[in-house]
Amino acid sequence: MSESTSESEGTSPADGVEPASGPTARTDQSGTDETGDDEVVLQTQDLSKFFGAIEAVKDVSIDVKADEILAIAGDNGAGKTTFIRMLSGVLQPTAGEIYLREDGRLVEQFFSSSKDAMDAGIATVYQEQHLSPNASAANNIFLGMEPLKDGPEGWLLRRTDMDHMITESRSLLNEIGFDFDPRSKVNELSGGQKQAVAVARALIRDPPIIILDEPTSEVSTTGTDKIIDLVRGIPDGEKSVILISHKIDVVVDVADRIAVMRDGEIVEILNTNEDDVDRLDIVERMHRERER
Ligand SMILES: Nc1ncnc2c1ncn2[C@@H]1O[C@H](COP(=O)(O)OP(=O)(O)OP(=O)(O)O)[C@@H](O)[C@H]1O
Ligand SMILES: [Mg+2]
Image 1 (cartoon, rainbow, N blue to C red):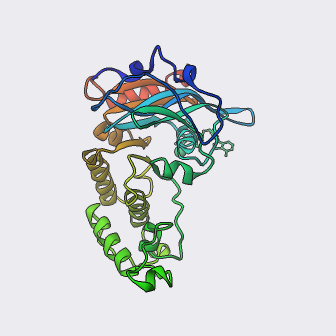
Image 2 (cartoon, rainbow, N blue to C red; image 1 turned 135 degrees about the horizontal axis):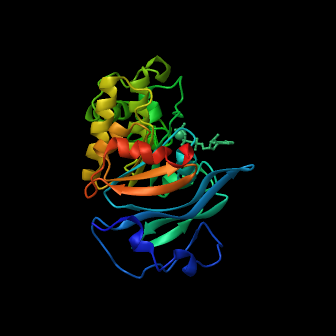
């Protein structure tokens, strides 16, 4: 497997971008019809975000490949969440571009909401979960895609098929190692169970790209293992995962590549399958410049 950025070098997508007139501007990027594990499914070019005078994310250019787990490691305030908020449509970039593979080529995206990103195939599990506390786990999992009952009750009266939602939620939660009642209200669940609801909500949409921001932050030890197992299991289903964490043990364990972020920049990309990656080494890289 070749190293990170090689595929985009030499053919900057920006060269082929037409003036943005609609939701997507077509780019005629590489012209190659590549397939396989190295295929780039998401790419950023010089993505930047300012908050006033603070540049939280600086010129981040990175490829995410099909079927890989890409971790972003960095200290508190390094810019990880800001970066993924741009990928998930919550924040608009100050500068730079986001591309997704559509019909075999990379197409520039302009997300104005998280729904846009979701519709484009990026599902995000946020650090602070956006769940409705008074609704059931099942209702949260199916939010915005509630199935209707069969027959006139559904098409005429628009009644949602609660039984189906409960059954499906239960089996999805079981799949990720949880067995609480999906009829429980979210505000009655533990931190780990809430996290499972957020993960299930992302997975049920079957997105090609899933982003997890600090999935272990609120989870008990057993819950952590379950979610990490889940992350490990995802690429078998042909998904790309971006995993944001400063828990180096977790990152070294599950990721194919680790992008080290420091002061808003990606300073290094390590390939855990090729490089001899040592967790102390990553911690050192996360802090290096700051200590000078
Ligand atoms: N909405 C905002 N307004 C102003 N500044 C912000 C905002 N969001 C983030 N920042 C700043 O941007 C920088 C990056 O923050 P970000 O949340 O992206 O870091 P992070 O890497 O996710 O950190 P953590 O590991 O603590 O979650 C920080 O300096 C932060 O204070
Ligand atoms: Mg964060």
